[in-house]
Length: 105
Image: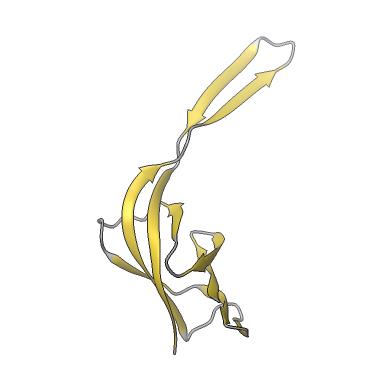
């Protein structure tokens, strides 16, 4: 089993080939290839490669499938005994990326 742990927009994701992941919005057009080069760890069928902090010889290639928005999260703030209430909703802009291959040079 081949997988990698990559850092994308300040978050770390465990990625495998053939699966898709929802990341924070990447401002590119649909169908475009992207390369993720901040690879922290790679497991290549039991052979473990750990970066300090990143692996320079490993590239993860992905394809942008769609741009979407996440489910609405409700933010509710209330100060007791002050009659102050504030209700807000937030939907995060996301990009769905299909991981195509993990290249180890």
